[in-house]
Amino acid sequence: MKKVLPFLLLGAAALLFCFGIGALALNFLGARSETVDTSKWIAPRDQVDNKKINPAVALGILAGTTDTGSVDDSLAAGDFEGAFAQIAYSTDFSDANRAGTLLLLGNRYAAGKQIAKAAWMYQYAVFLATVSPNPSDLTRAQTLLEASQGLKALNMNAEARSALDQAYLIAQYSFALPRDTRAGLLEQIARSYQAMGATKQANEARQMGADTATAQTEDAVNVSRRPFKIQPTDPPEYPELVTKLKERVVAARELLDALNLNPPKSPDEMPDSLIRALGDKLYEEDGLRSDFYASQYDQATDASAQLGILRDKLRWLAIKYRIARGGYGISLLPEWEDSVDEIAQELNDTYSDYLAITEQQASSLDKTDEANRSREDVLRAALVAGRWGLYPQYDETDLRARLDEVSQGLRDEQVATLRLDTFTRGNQVVYLLVPDELYGMGERALPR
Image (cartoon, rainbow, N blue to C red; front, side, top):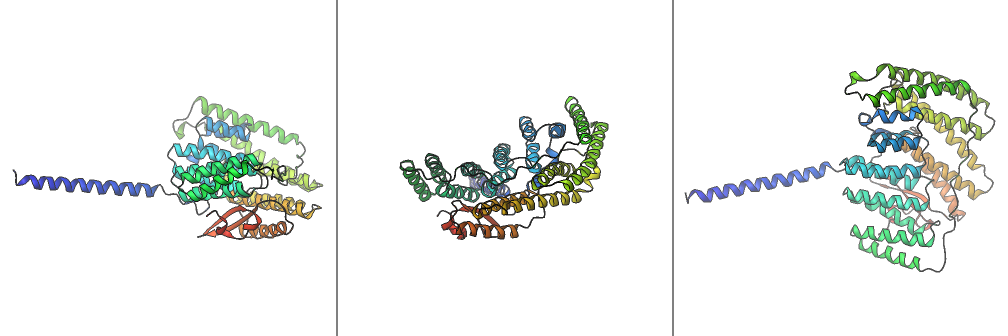
């Protein structure tokens, strides 16, 4: 027995060693499986999982619920995918509101261990905070800070640092941040850098915040400017279309009631007759809308009237496109599903017309500096629409080149604002907001 015991102990040790190696391998592979590649852009609509959408909530938008109301209802019902779909397809959300909802969804997806989905929510928010012309600099910095914290919690340290660096650039160089606000942001940024182990940047930001807080002068110079926007004129009321819209709303509510009162447990239990009824109403409404938009656009006498028609058409095409892609969690109109490419083309062409008219109006402003700033707003909005999938055939390279031209004009005119710049990291185009002295420096503009 004494002779056998060493062999038994040795065997047990070997077995434990194998278990240890196996556990390490499993841990390594498990960590690797959570790695998310966000370097190649994916439009939000292409990330929506239609099978996870609850149609008993999502269809509310077809029954008269507002865009924000639809998102709120989806979040309250725990239908995160439905809320995301509304953000992905709708043309009516401001980018600031869209970014805020994305941050909330990122937190919810992270809590549900949907790591890839959470990471993309934060990255979408970072993109909007950097590229969109709409958010204030304060909103931009706060969005970037929260996204950075979310990404760090997902162990996406490089992405978290990138978002934090952009927040730091805005906090340092913004021309629109009041002194006390800037000081508070810099202190938050310092804490975030410290949590990432970036002691040098943490100390610099903390000292800058302290100096700002005790400064005797206020250096914000353009707090009140709003991005260029033409107020479209609403199209005239068309009684036949109003009637058809009401019929569609009634059909949608009847379907919603059926889905909520008797939730189907299988596809066989779906209220097919009510689904067909809603599909028929949508199809009839589409026919009326097509004729209405064509005739009214031909009769429009100015840019505001044209934009009013195009804006209404974009809203409708966004709904139609979502239906065609099954984005309500249910098949409503197989005919549109078979024509999804044609609908996408119409959406693209309508957005192209809308942006062309808006840019033309921006360029016609009397003051050169304001014309350039307004053109910059339009071009940045076009970049957002393109990456969002609402303007599918946009030419990002051309838009960046035109933005560079406008930025040069603004630099020559010494207009006090941050410039949207880019650099390439691997195969990824990275956008960043910088002051004139850092424009064109690419990655070297980032805090080091």
